[in-house]
Image (cartoon, rainbow, N blue to C red; front, side, top):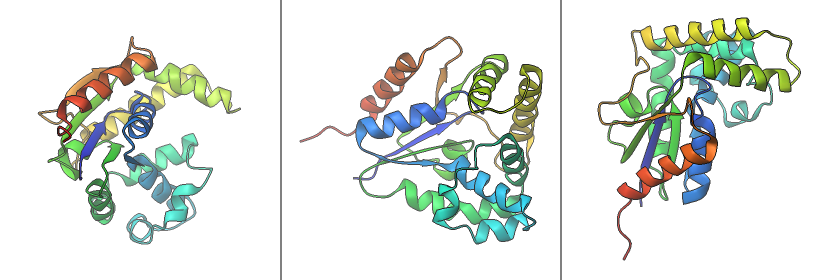
Length: 205
């Protein structure tokens, strides 16, 4: 069985948490496509050209423990606007999406560009202020020295860059189900996502 769940949305809206939990619940494979861009961004910080880094990306690049820093996040957002980078990573993502046994992909353009034929499309969002507070607490919890104001400015800058880029801008697919997690806890948001997926799953038997 091939069954693709596309989950898009801005940073810190909860799509990663929901995607991992949904994949575990249904036994689907999971790909955080943002890690692809973070891995490319990290390599550009070391001096590589973005397109070359994307074409040469290796599985071990996605397993590094330094891909969640604010510096790498900004680099990822910058390389993601480069059409050649996006093109280099499309085939990898599409092949993953149609693997046997089901797949969940989360990112910015999964339902609109990478997998427009996905059986389920969700767009997970929340207010910029809520998302910035979540990211601030996450960063502080990991020992990063930052402020709420700096994190909010960073979130808004990334939102603008992701939404305004010429190639594959971040936006909900026309047939995506909107999931606003501003006032939801994780179990509530996860239950809503699971219910939508169960509604689209082919009947067994």
